[in-house]
Amino acid sequence: MATPAFDSSVLTRRGVLAAAASTLLLAACGQQGQRPDDSAAGSAAPDGHELVVGASLELSGKGAALGVLQQRAMEVTAETLNISGFPVGNMRRTVRLEIRDNGSNPQEAARQVTELIRRDRVHALVGGTLAETSMAMVEVAQQLQVPFLSLAAADEIVLPLAQRTYIYKLTPDADDIAQRMARLLESLQVRRVALLAAEGLHGDSGVRAVQSAVQSANVDLRRTVRLAANGRDLTAAAERAAAGEPDGVIVWGTAPDSGTAARELRRAGYRGLLFFDAGAVADDTLARPNAAAVEGAYAIHPACLSSSTLITTTTAEEDRRDFTNRYLQRHGSFKGFAPYASDALQLLASSARMATSLDRGRLRAYLQTQVLEGIAGAYAYAPIRHGGMEPDSLAVYQVKQGSWTRYA
Image (cartoon, rainbow, N blue to C red; front, side, top):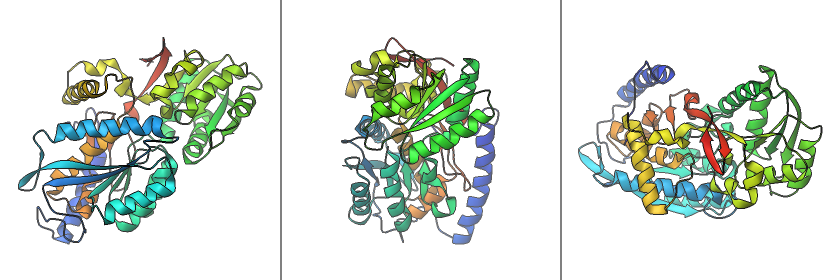
């Protein structure tokens, strides 16, 4: 699997963050005086040959369009890691996954992670493709001091940092997506836009980011319309967004609502350009009922969708090729998505290797030093930054003949 990359000529910001994180970490470890391969003392987690990772995912309900894909990605990467294991201290470890279906219900997600920590004694947690389920897990993980890697897209998941010391995010920050989208709007000479944003934390981040991004671009945000959290009244919301005939409509949400919103916009008579954030990139968005509506639409998404990643020129690209091939063998098709859960396991395995321990506190400390070229994209964590993906991992895609095609 990919190892942390510290080439400053390629990863300038990542290199700076890594150096700062390493300095602070060495000082902290020196004060603590913990010895290498200190087992799970003080963590209530088991000391054995396995890194036990608990995952609460949306395998049913509203978030299943993204949750099932992340489950598959996590299982493929766990299988790869377990072929020969990975070194932690003086032994090689394997990964054991404890995966639960939270049904896209925040209360159930909180209950599950509490059980995973107290009964299954997991070393770390991964999950929550929906912002609300992730936030429910954040409260438990922080209180019980267990590292949690969120797969959801909401900037508040890791903020304020002083209250999120055990929390990390893998998705791109909303500001980075919005800035890339604003540049795209300018290049396409889109002057008037409407924003159709989901209710909830994901949409809140998008609204703030888009409002800020268009201020520095020659783009007029005419109106902002929110999509109901229950997925209802999409028709009325689409009609309000299409009113005034904007040049473009930005749909900021997650599948399956993204595709449905596009379909409703076309039914409302809107024939202009459509723009999605990364949450739209799932099989459901390109499904037959949405196919005509989303054809030609643009999306800002991690560059892992590109077919060029199958050309092996670097270790990271070789890992992406291997991941894609294994995924195809197991599931028959790979239509493209950001396999954040795969990178979450890589980050945890790398942290355990560097910490020479599975102690929860040490895993947390070493997570904030990780600089990784993963399957979905690049990450540079630091004590002052717990998320998300690096901006240079993002690319522009356009739907052409029912597939996501690299645009820029």
